[in-house]
Length: 186
View 1 (cartoon, rainbow, N blue to C red):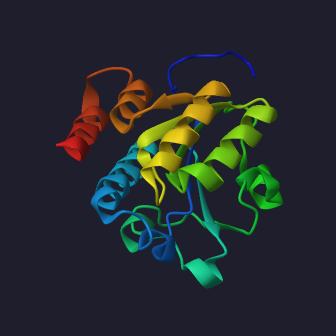
View 2: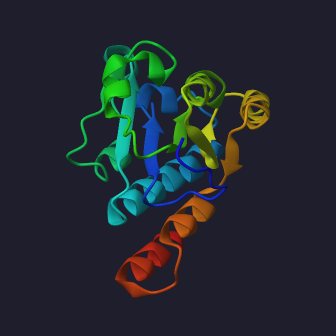
């Protein structure tokens, strides 16, 4: 890794949306899903506005469906990577999309205690700095999410939130992109 920063930086980050799929979403606590989908959408839009590379994955889409329509609409032109392994890192197509000059990976999606944690731990093992967006990840059982967040933090991942990532990427409160980003959180 070139340099380590405790802040997400726009020129060194890649954003990953992991397995935000139709059939998985219906199994999640519905009181949490609206906020998680909103936050994932906000991160997608922010990444697009700031030219942060985006990777989207889908776990066995034949059985679990495709990415939620509201998120697919915000990621037009990005082809999701289909996978069967829980860790995205185990999928060769995913590894090919990792950008060498972007050592920071921002993770959002589901489930925190399965695909997110396995991906995060494998990314750490290959030298990436991993940020977990706590308000943009979910598990069926909140205790499993809490355990996964603790494990990832213990493994050296930075646990953060949607607005922190957005404003760390942005860095200054000026210009048209700033105005567009502020509208996303109002």
